[in-house]
Image (tube, rainbow, N blue to C red; front, side):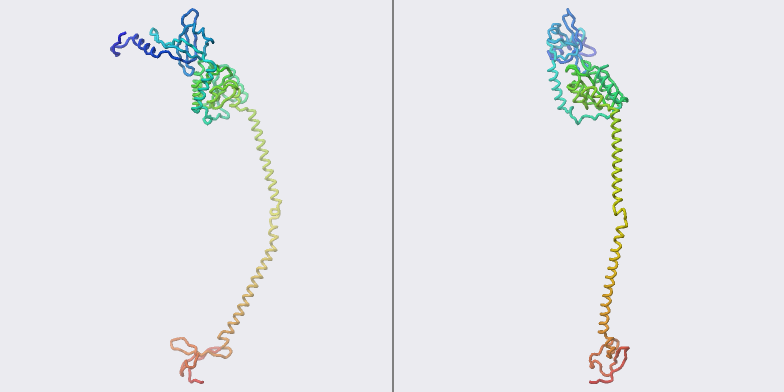
Length: 411
């Protein structure tokens, strides 16, 4: 086939050329393996081609598949809508109607063992990324104002949650999103409901609820997209999927795991009667504790009042009065004795000073002769040589002093 002219507004390619190029590019992909979930099977008797639709359960994307009816009939387990399969085939672009289809030559139904192995691999991956870390779990409120509930329409799980929660706390409010909980449409609709409830500011906690079932039935709750969406929610999420032995991956990424939907209602909504009984009990215990404390302190005060120090506060002082008087008299006597002793000592010293003093000597008839020195103090005469004739002298006697002059000397 000749190459078309360069593409431009003046030289546009015809549709046949575009379709041929698209077919060439798709044909280069070759044969591939594809995994998905069957959502539609159309195989009519007498036809040469069976038509299927396979979709990705994590996102809203599907692919048309064609095969021979004999291939479907030869499978050991008949395929049904919702079956998880692995297909081998080659993509083809049909230029006549501009559509892409996968022509398959081999179909393998994914068994329970393979599903469990894939779940375990995804479990290890999410655990390595820290989505199971207990430190990331958000606390669930004690009494949520509004509970978001994602569950199947008119399901037993919905009835269990609503009835149990209503009996335990009649004022509880729910924001319900009914979605498929199994099959090809389950994951996309649950993701959309999860986004809506997480964006609602009135919703305090979200519950994923479903009854028990087989591994295939519970497969949407182990979907990677759903697990990552639960982990990314800002609102606490409670996983109440299946029965006690069931453990989908949503149980591990959720902030709280409930064994059953009924258990979720019991974990989220307190029992009003039990809470009232607890409040009554605590009030009685608080009143009893207060009474016991008052009685204990009253007995303690009574014991303090009965002690001698408080019964007769002046008794201690009364007992000390005599001791104080005795010590005061003893102190007074000691001071008086000390004063008398010092007085006698002073008198004795005074008598000695009087006896030894010059006045006493003068009183016995002695006199003190002093030589008068002009412009100077009088000097005591100790020798007659110090007073030549004519020297002015001062004679001091017991009752006064005399002035005289030396008129002569006697031997």
